[in-house]
Image (tube, rainbow, N blue to C red; front, side, top):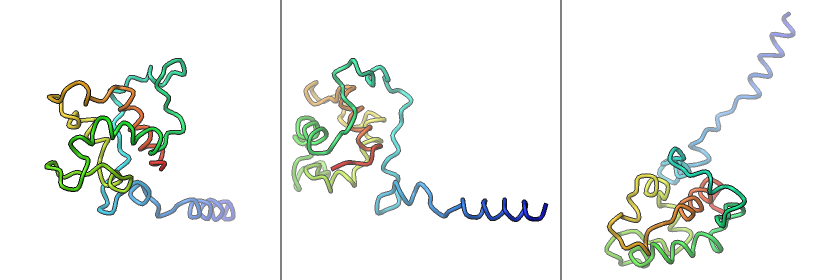
Length: 135
């Protein structure tokens, strides 16, 4: 019985670690950046039969074209009046897209339709973020 207890304690001790979500999914300030809300997600867009491809997403091929088309008219340079520059991959790492998208802050609803994100674009950005921000 003592051997089993020791073995279980030893096994438990080895399986524990000090790693936590903050160590893996936090920015320099300790704020979570991979915390997307999926409660109101239209999961039918994940179907293989749609044109919304959500696999193997990369910044250069999939996300940057969305950002250029929908965001960079306001957030496209260092001196924009909005204080957020989304022109580089590094700048995107400090911006909480999930919070902005999930709460309908960005793009603001009063912008013309050509600047609004489609459901597919929202899913691509959120999926890309949760898949690890592949460059």
